[in-house]
Length: 507
View 1 (cartoon, rainbow, N blue to C red):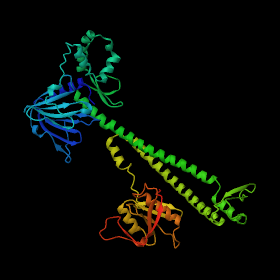
View 2: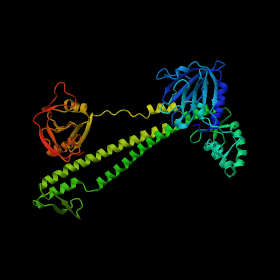
View 3: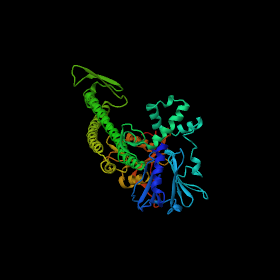
View 4: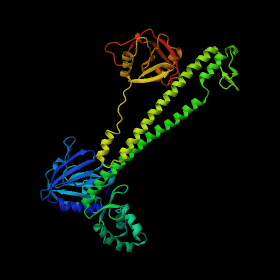
């Protein structure tokens, strides 16, 4: 946040007037990348430096009161606690300054944006860095640049111009003819310009990314001559307004994305229902087959009959020649029943999605009206937290009138097999490999159709280590022939009277 040497220079001078002669009373951290220093000033008043060295934020604050957390707090740089501050020295034309202590050590503050760090430097000891990944210098004076603004040469002028941040460069480009000046003209211009930077007002902007500027861009919301007040105001704007808005925008994007997905689902589902209703009913086709049994010969692949529902036209009906006409009609009747069930299920889902959209709209409105961080955090925990949906602890699949259940993990397998399945239900598992337990719930006294068993076997193979094989063996037996051995791990069972089916793993 602070890429301007000229602002940091003013900040270090202000700290010098406050801290010189005072004592360091505490140094601790209670958040990642945040370090807090407590001081006792000459007038016995407390003063704090709260430095956030996060690579994204890099915020600094100087409160007179700071309430330390009772938990998750750790003391740092303990060897200098109680030491006196002899001076605050600014590194010449470098974004760093040091607090010189009376034990010949120094606290070095390097305000380098993403690479910001605070180090304890002692000539007799190895330097200590708060951010250990960044190397601390052995001597803070080595950071200073030897530039005399009143006696510049071409090399020192180039070094000086590198200390100009983007704000200064934009100002020089838009408000002066600096780029058109020759070297001698720049030598005359520079001292006066830098002096103006050292005395200019400080402007805090809250438009876009909040920042402190030495120039009035007409976008500022706060003006001061005190760099500490400017830092505190920037910290307040950033934490109370900018971060809140960033969080709001992220949550609003997530909620609007969910709303769009729900609306798309409703639109596609309504189109699907319309398509199912507009095409000829499978039940009508089955009726016409039954009405024309006498006209159907064995091995016919199709028949052309008068349309019972549109008497002026004929209709061509495709048949499966390997089965009887009655069986063809039976299949269509069953499919028609499933089609009605499908339409009803889609309608239920549409109603549920509309309710979801209504809830999302309420959440979006509540978030949009939120102005402060605490209220936003409370909304995230309450308004935005959906109640947990209690369901079966395993996956469920349906085929015609049969339900197929697939365990999700070892514990889920045990619950499915020994708590939920009945003794006459069919139990399946991939052969000789880890996988999910699969159960087909039996309907009445009729045996489970082979097509259902094959479908469940394909699921058992899919939810196993044999998932990638072209064909996989799957064992199946009635649940009553599956037992648990005492002391065995979750999911481990012993199976008897099993049969084997070779299927392709398929979801």
